[in-house]
Image 1: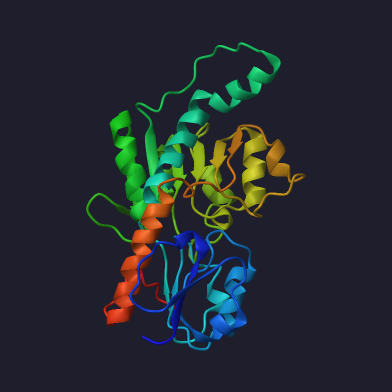
Image 2 (image 1 turned 90 degrees about the vertical axis):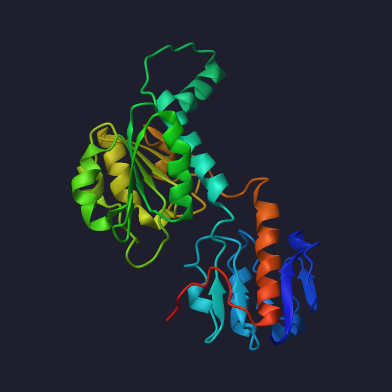
Length: 298
């Protein structure tokens, strides 16, 4: 262990036997030079991770997000990168279920109808009896699966490799046309960037629902817009490309689309889980134990 631990202010109350400093906004330059363990601000601006290049003593970067792609360009050589796997699983899975139910049952349309006082009764698809394909069999994907099964659904899981209860990604082409709902819960990397393209969307069952709680760039935005306007599918997005979505972006005016502003993991459950992870990682760092959630980097 070398240097200090540099933590965002919302983690105040985290107990650590070594020296640690809480920062608010931009960390002080003197602290950056000494920092050996750094937790970037959650959902902070790009500058939050750009400071990594100014941290010569850095040993560990502990993220508060499951995604890590945005850090890689700034990660110093030799520093370990750890994500927040497990911290956001429950909250993100909750939102995925909420987006599915809201879209299938037309709750977003009902909310808009309240503005004009329009009573529009119609028969809508149930979640019960739907075939749901979850693309991504990590912590978030498994949490989604656990919450889907009590709704009397048939859940199909796809991961990088086949294992008990999980199909390989090579089975995606044959499984896509069978699904009423497709949930995207994969990390963003070179294999998933642009994965949901025109060919993917065209292979989906007519009238199926696409739900993305992963990263915006997993879905090719222009391809999705085309399929929504064609009426082939509907979609619910918690993430987008670009993000934040500009007010004049064509996604806002697409039919059959529900958008939430990347709130999947940002709930009251986040704080306690984040503090628990950071405290455990600090203890491991101080004692020289293996860290959790280490991301392999080049």
